[in-house]
Length: 281
Ligand code: SAM
Image (cartoon, rainbow, N blue to C red):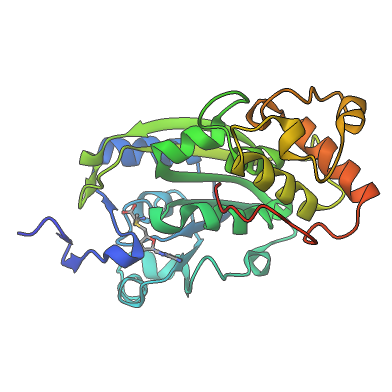
């Protein structure tokens, strides 16, 4: 039988469908999530239930968001899951997760994410981080490396700074392509993202933080002085304890936020006169 057909379902590439098929890996992920009854558990992309079934075996209820109508309909008639799930047939990228917030428990979000949209999906979820307890995601290993990177490394970029702005990042487990059906072309890894109870370096205006990241990481070879010369001079950089001869990839999250906050206090709109339009994350 074709590698693309799993449990009678033909995997849809456009929905990033690679179904988990390795009991040891599935067990390790569920142990990392450690679901408890009563928690506000939300799975993105339950698919054929590889994670949903073992999580549901430990709790009375969970909520799922699944874009593929056929898969959502399968879950609605699933003999065990149908009574335990609240099924939202919806696009997680557009989904208002605050609608699932509960006063008693913050949300615990997890999923083997569709790799084609995982980065924008995480940015979408960061906007709800105030009502999220933690997130466990299967991602491309390269994306987990970027999330967890430190200044000065090749993997350090806009995604790193924005993820670490909101969350503590903990890589949990590496997963080979053979754990999926169909097997993806890349290695995968599971990461735990735990939103900070209080932001360690709060930005007064996220638009400025986004802009300094885009400008910095869009021009990685330039010095900080040259990258930001339209926005601030050496005197300002030095007053923020930033060496103008460094490259932007050497700056810490705290330094990016210090630049953004200075710009917010001393400049107008973050989107005015923006020379850098790079989408590099
Ligand atoms: N959880 C299953 C597993 O581990 O076997 C499936 C994982 S598969 C990598 C990704 C799942 O996300 C698929 O079920 C796919 O249909 C669903 N999906 C893709 N894009 C989505 C979106 N924008 N919103 C919600 N679900 C989506």
